[in-house]
Picture 1: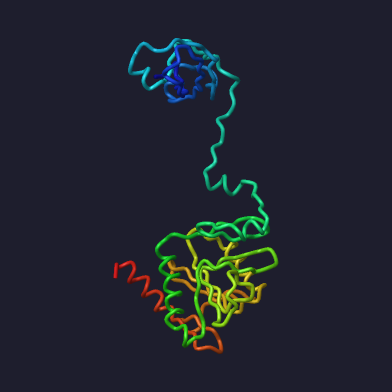
Picture 2: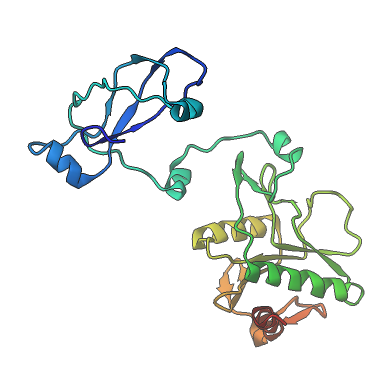
Amino acid sequence: MVFGGMQPQWRHVPPSLSVFSISATLRPYCPARMAQVYPAGPPPTMTTSKIVSAKAFSDPVLKNVGYAMVPAYDFTPRPHNPLPFVRSPEHTRSMATPVLIPVSEYLRTTYRPDCDYINGELKERHLGEKPHSATQSFFVTTFSNRRKDWGVRGFTELRVQVSESNYRIPDVCVLRLGEPPDPIVRTPPLICIEVLSPGDSRSEMQERVQDYLAMGVENIWLLDPVRRQAWVATANGNHEPADGEFAVPGTPIRIPLADIYQELDDMAAGR
């Protein structure tokens, strides 16, 4: 039902009450209709009815659902104000004031998926798409199959303490066999691997790389499974892997990029 170009938003009331008070918030619903009702001057952006009283409905259908309709409303427009700017959820999240939590709460809390912890703030990670997941699985499977030959083990969702109060979670963390079995990595891993997602920004990824470098991680691999691009991150910048493969100098660890891309092709083809 529409009143004078305004559409009420009904307040639900108990159907058992014989007398009740209601209020309705009215908003413009159609620009053309608004132009007819308010031909001169700027239309009102919002008006709120006065609190009114009415007897319970005699209509059993309306009474059962418990919605109220009353004929008397205050349609006096308020002074014109511009329509409020509605922010997108992404914009709202980016502008929101971060909520800081103590590191002790972070360490005793399980998040799904887990979050980075930077300067007291939880940082969400971009996950959940097939190319990202397939690439992550490929690395972990490769390191698992070569565990004894290479003397390493690959992990996912492992918290790495990159500084006194900051924690990162690499997409894949590779540790040497014989590392202390602590639930949190506190010494530099052999390799930290980051698989880029569409939501990752260059600045965010660079911050992660700087944290790994400051911790002392010597091998930092970055891979974009969608664009089929790969880099090795160092203190001197990012460069493409030599000879088309990820490698750790002084070890037998070698992973050709062609093998990774073949895995992605197989996934896309359903093989």
